[in-house]
Image 1 (cartoon, rainbow, N blue to C red):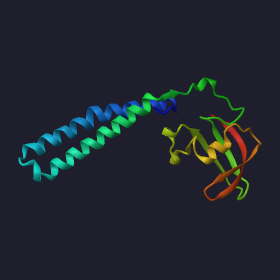
Image 2 (image 1 turned 135 degrees about the vertical axis):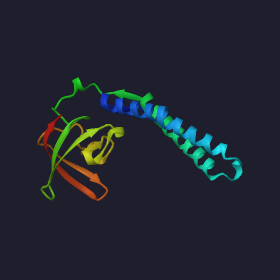
Image 3 (image 1 turned 180 degrees about the vertical axis):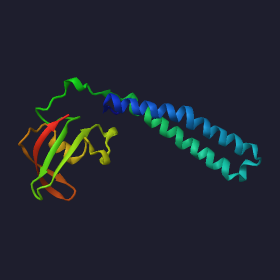
Image 4 (image 1 turned 30 degrees about the vertical axis):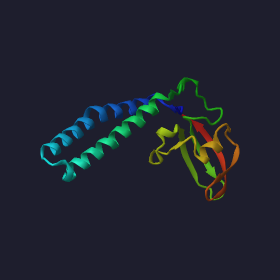
Length: 156
């Protein structure tokens, strides 16, 4: 079983998603299967086949989520600091090639969301930043080549 680091909030969201899938989606699919079964001959019943397939997909999704939370380790946010870049830090970096500044929060893989500027700790940029301090210049190999970033700020 893989260990996944999560915040309390991320863990809570995954548990809520499991509860929703089990208490809302599972009964919906069961009803759809029952309705399709009531329509007669199952050998030529596309609705029945689709409902059974949806059921299989749902059960697989529930199983994956349960495995994820079973291997979850909650990050103790009281032990976090801003001395050097670590998971859960918000980091402002400057791209030394084009002068652009961006800010990312480094999170567990299961909580990554680029729209919210949350990058997974397993990404090349996050890996390259972890353990460094304000003012450090880090070279990070990304798919497009080697990039240099200066760490401008570390916060929560």
